[in-house]
Amino acid sequence: MIAELGSAFALGLAGAGHCLGMCGGIAAALQLGGVKSAGMTLAYHGGRIASYTALGAALGFAAGSIDIAAWTMALRYLAGILLIAMGLYIADWWRVLTWLERGGAILWRPVQHWSSALLPLRHWYQAIALGLCWGLMPCGLIYSSLAWAATAQDAGESALMMLFFGLGTLPAMLATSFGAGAVQSALRRKGLKVTLGLLLMVSGCWTVYLTAAHAQHSAHTMQHDTPMDHSQHH
Image (cartoon, rainbow, N blue to C red; front, side, top):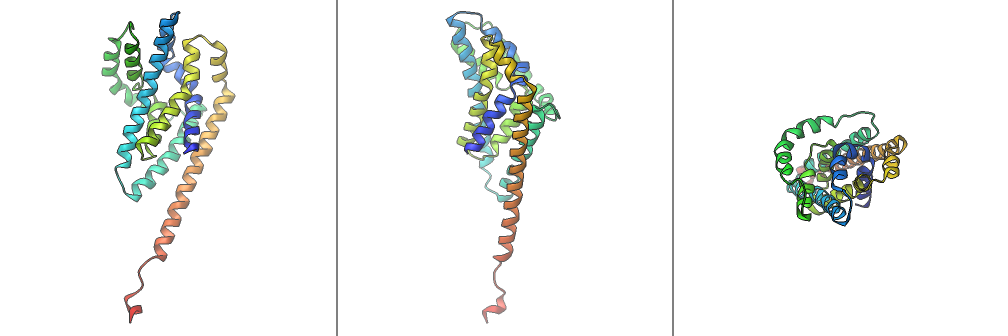
Protein backbone atom coordinates (compact mmCIF):
# COMPACT_ATOMS: atom_id res chain seq x y z
CA MET A 1 0.00 0.00 0.00
CA ILE A 2 2.94 2.34 0.68
CA ALA A 3 4.02 2.06 -2.97
CA GLU A 4 0.52 2.97 -4.16
CA LEU A 5 0.37 6.01 -1.87
CA GLY A 6 3.80 7.13 -3.08
CA SER A 7 2.68 6.75 -6.70
CA ALA A 8 -0.50 8.70 -5.97
CA PHE A 9 1.45 11.58 -4.40
CA ALA A 10 3.95 11.58 -7.27
CA LEU A 11 1.08 11.63 -9.74
CA GLY A 12 -0.41 14.72 -8.14
CA LEU A 13 3.00 16.39 -7.98
CA ALA A 14 3.86 15.46 -11.56
CA GLY A 15 0.59 16.89 -12.83
CA ALA A 16 1.56 20.36 -11.58
CA GLY A 17 1.59 21.98 -15.02
CA HIS A 18 -1.77 20.50 -15.87
CA CYS A 19 -3.23 21.57 -12.52
CA LEU A 20 -2.02 25.12 -12.98
CA GLY A 21 -3.65 25.32 -16.38
CA MET A 22 -6.96 23.78 -15.34
CA CYS A 23 -7.71 25.46 -12.01
CA GLY A 24 -4.76 27.66 -11.13
CA GLY A 25 -6.73 30.76 -12.09
CA ILE A 26 -9.45 30.23 -9.50
CA ALA A 27 -6.81 29.43 -6.85
CA ALA A 28 -4.97 32.68 -7.62
CA ALA A 29 -8.21 34.68 -7.60
CA LEU A 30 -9.03 33.52 -4.08
CA GLN A 31 -5.81 35.01 -2.67
CA LEU A 32 -6.53 38.73 -2.58
CA GLY A 33 -4.38 39.56 0.41
CA GLY A 34 -4.98 39.43 4.14
CA VAL A 35 -5.74 36.67 6.64
CA LYS A 36 -9.33 36.22 5.51
CA SER A 37 -8.39 35.41 1.91
CA ALA A 38 -5.64 33.04 3.06
CA GLY A 39 -8.25 31.16 5.07
CA MET A 40 -10.53 31.13 2.03
CA THR A 41 -7.75 29.66 -0.09
CA LEU A 42 -6.99 26.89 2.39
CA ALA A 43 -10.71 26.13 2.76
CA TYR A 44 -11.02 25.86 -1.02
CA HIS A 45 -8.13 23.43 -1.28
CA GLY A 46 -9.50 21.45 1.65
CA GLY A 47 -12.81 21.07 -0.15
CA ARG A 48 -11.08 20.14 -3.39
CA ILE A 49 -9.03 17.37 -1.76
CA ALA A 50 -12.04 16.19 0.24
CA SER A 51 -13.96 15.72 -3.02
CA TYR A 52 -11.15 13.56 -4.45
CA THR A 53 -11.08 11.48 -1.25
CA ALA A 54 -14.85 10.98 -1.11
CA LEU A 55 -15.05 10.01 -4.79
CA GLY A 56 -12.17 7.58 -4.30
CA ALA A 57 -13.97 5.95 -1.37
CA ALA A 58 -17.20 5.61 -3.35
CA LEU A 59 -15.51 4.06 -6.38
CA GLY A 60 -13.36 1.75 -4.23
CA PHE A 61 -16.47 0.51 -2.44
CA ALA A 62 -18.31 -0.05 -5.73
CA ALA A 63 -15.38 -1.92 -7.29
CA GLY A 64 -14.92 -4.05 -4.17
CA SER A 65 -18.57 -5.08 -4.05
CA ILE A 66 -17.96 -7.47 -6.98
CA ASP A 67 -16.22 -10.54 -5.60
CA ILE A 68 -15.20 -12.31 -8.81
CA ALA A 69 -11.60 -13.38 -9.50
CA ALA A 70 -11.73 -12.38 -13.18
CA TRP A 71 -13.03 -8.90 -12.21
CA THR A 72 -10.18 -8.43 -9.73
CA MET A 73 -7.63 -9.52 -12.33
CA ALA A 74 -9.10 -7.13 -14.91
CA LEU A 75 -8.89 -4.24 -12.44
CA ARG A 76 -5.23 -5.00 -11.74
CA TYR A 77 -4.46 -4.93 -15.45
CA LEU A 78 -6.41 -1.66 -15.69
CA ALA A 79 -4.35 -0.19 -12.85
CA GLY A 80 -1.10 -0.94 -14.69
CA ILE A 81 -2.36 0.36 -18.01
CA LEU A 82 -3.63 3.58 -16.40
CA LEU A 83 -0.29 4.18 -14.69
CA ILE A 84 1.45 3.84 -18.04
CA ALA A 85 -1.09 6.16 -19.71
CA MET A 86 -0.72 8.75 -16.94
CA GLY A 87 3.06 8.59 -17.21
CA LEU A 88 2.86 9.27 -20.96
CA TYR A 89 0.37 12.07 -20.31
CA ILE A 90 2.49 13.78 -17.66
CA ALA A 91 5.67 13.51 -19.74
CA ASP A 92 3.79 15.10 -22.67
CA TRP A 93 4.57 12.14 -24.91
CA TRP A 94 1.00 11.06 -25.60
CA ARG A 95 -2.07 13.07 -24.53
CA VAL A 96 -4.28 9.98 -24.53
CA LEU A 97 -6.33 11.07 -21.51
CA THR A 98 -7.79 14.16 -23.18
CA TRP A 99 -10.77 12.10 -24.38
CA LEU A 100 -11.79 11.73 -20.72
CA GLU A 101 -11.83 15.52 -20.40
CA ARG A 102 -14.07 15.90 -23.43
CA GLY A 103 -16.55 13.40 -22.02
CA GLY A 104 -16.42 14.93 -18.54
CA ALA A 105 -17.15 18.42 -19.88
CA ILE A 106 -20.75 17.36 -20.47
CA LEU A 107 -21.19 16.34 -16.84
CA TRP A 108 -19.31 19.41 -15.61
CA ARG A 109 -21.67 22.02 -17.09
CA PRO A 110 -24.47 21.78 -14.46
CA VAL A 111 -21.90 21.67 -11.64
CA GLN A 112 -20.13 24.73 -13.05
CA HIS A 113 -23.44 26.60 -13.24
CA TRP A 114 -24.17 25.82 -9.60
CA SER A 115 -20.65 26.66 -8.41
CA SER A 116 -20.70 30.07 -10.11
CA ALA A 117 -23.51 31.04 -7.73
CA LEU A 118 -21.01 30.78 -4.85
CA LEU A 119 -18.93 33.67 -6.20
CA PRO A 120 -17.86 36.09 -4.88
CA LEU A 121 -16.87 34.14 -1.78
CA ARG A 122 -17.83 35.75 1.54
CA HIS A 123 -17.57 32.85 3.98
CA TRP A 124 -15.18 29.92 4.51
CA TYR A 125 -17.93 27.36 3.97
CA GLN A 126 -18.57 28.81 0.52
CA ALA A 127 -14.90 28.24 -0.29
CA ILE A 128 -15.17 24.61 0.86
CA ALA A 129 -18.29 24.14 -1.29
CA LEU A 130 -16.48 25.62 -4.28
CA GLY A 131 -13.57 23.25 -3.70
CA LEU A 132 -15.97 20.30 -3.55
CA CYS A 133 -17.40 21.35 -6.91
CA TRP A 134 -13.98 21.89 -8.46
CA GLY A 135 -13.02 18.31 -7.68
CA LEU A 136 -15.57 17.22 -10.30
CA MET A 137 -14.12 19.31 -13.13
CA PRO A 138 -13.33 17.59 -16.47
CA CYS A 139 -9.70 16.67 -15.88
CA GLY A 140 -8.21 13.54 -17.43
CA LEU A 141 -5.66 13.38 -14.63
CA ILE A 142 -8.36 13.35 -11.93
CA TYR A 143 -10.63 10.90 -13.75
CA SER A 144 -7.86 8.42 -14.53
CA SER A 145 -6.54 8.71 -10.98
CA LEU A 146 -10.01 7.88 -9.67
CA ALA A 147 -10.23 4.85 -11.96
CA TRP A 148 -6.78 3.74 -10.82
CA ALA A 149 -7.69 4.22 -7.13
CA ALA A 150 -10.84 2.12 -7.65
CA THR A 151 -8.65 -0.85 -8.56
CA ALA A 152 -7.77 -1.15 -4.86
CA GLN A 153 -11.35 -2.47 -4.43
CA ASP A 154 -11.51 -1.06 -0.92
CA ALA A 155 -13.19 2.18 0.15
CA GLY A 156 -10.51 3.06 2.71
CA GLU A 157 -7.51 2.30 0.49
CA SER A 158 -9.02 4.05 -2.54
CA ALA A 159 -9.83 7.10 -0.40
CA LEU A 160 -6.25 7.19 0.91
CA MET A 161 -4.84 6.99 -2.62
CA MET A 162 -6.94 9.96 -3.72
CA LEU A 163 -6.07 11.86 -0.54
CA PHE A 164 -2.36 11.48 -1.35
CA PHE A 165 -3.05 12.45 -4.96
CA GLY A 166 -4.70 15.63 -3.70
CA LEU A 167 -1.82 16.36 -1.34
CA GLY A 168 0.54 15.96 -4.28
CA THR A 169 -1.27 18.74 -6.14
CA LEU A 170 -0.91 21.17 -3.21
CA PRO A 171 2.61 22.51 -3.89
CA ALA A 172 1.64 23.77 -7.36
CA MET A 173 -1.77 25.04 -6.31
CA LEU A 174 -0.58 26.81 -3.15
CA ALA A 175 2.33 28.32 -5.08
CA THR A 176 -0.24 29.81 -7.46
CA SER A 177 -2.49 30.97 -4.63
CA PHE A 178 0.29 32.71 -2.74
CA GLY A 179 2.39 33.88 -5.67
CA ALA A 180 5.42 31.64 -5.25
CA GLY A 181 6.76 31.92 -8.79
CA ALA A 182 9.96 29.97 -8.09
CA VAL A 183 8.02 26.93 -6.91
CA GLN A 184 5.77 27.09 -9.95
CA SER A 185 8.79 27.23 -12.27
CA ALA A 186 10.45 24.26 -10.55
CA LEU A 187 7.32 22.13 -10.79
CA ARG A 188 6.90 22.98 -14.47
CA ARG A 189 10.40 21.86 -15.45
CA LYS A 190 10.39 19.36 -18.27
CA GLY A 191 13.03 17.20 -16.60
CA LEU A 192 10.92 16.72 -13.46
CA LYS A 193 7.82 15.87 -15.46
CA VAL A 194 9.67 13.35 -17.63
CA THR A 195 11.34 11.73 -14.60
CA LEU A 196 8.07 11.33 -12.72
CA GLY A 197 6.33 10.19 -15.89
CA LEU A 198 8.96 7.48 -16.40
CA LEU A 199 8.60 6.33 -12.80
CA LEU A 200 4.85 5.98 -13.27
CA MET A 201 5.34 4.04 -16.50
CA VAL A 202 7.82 1.67 -14.82
CA SER A 203 5.36 1.18 -11.96
CA GLY A 204 2.59 0.44 -14.47
CA CYS A 205 4.70 -2.09 -16.38
CA TRP A 206 5.64 -3.80 -13.12
CA THR A 207 1.97 -3.97 -12.11
CA VAL A 208 1.02 -5.57 -15.44
CA TYR A 209 3.91 -8.05 -15.15
CA LEU A 210 2.96 -9.08 -11.60
CA THR A 211 -0.69 -9.49 -12.61
CA ALA A 212 0.22 -11.64 -15.61
CA ALA A 213 2.56 -13.76 -13.47
CA HIS A 214 -0.14 -14.22 -10.84
CA ALA A 215 -2.68 -15.22 -13.50
CA GLN A 216 -0.26 -17.76 -14.97
CA HIS A 217 0.50 -19.20 -11.53
CA SER A 218 -3.22 -19.47 -10.70
CA ALA A 219 -3.93 -21.28 -13.99
CA HIS A 220 -1.00 -23.66 -13.38
CA THR A 221 -2.23 -24.41 -9.85
CA MET A 222 -5.76 -25.13 -11.03
CA GLN A 223 -4.47 -27.62 -13.61
CA HIS A 224 -2.63 -29.58 -10.93
CA ASP A 225 -5.47 -29.43 -8.42
CA THR A 226 -8.08 -31.24 -10.56
CA PRO A 227 -9.83 -34.17 -8.82
CA MET A 228 -8.40 -37.65 -9.33
CA ASP A 229 -10.00 -39.82 -11.98
CA HIS A 230 -12.87 -41.94 -10.61
CA SER A 231 -11.09 -45.15 -11.70
CA GLN A 232 -8.31 -44.43 -9.24
CA HIS A 233 -10.69 -45.03 -6.38
CA HIS A 234 -11.19 -48.72 -7.34
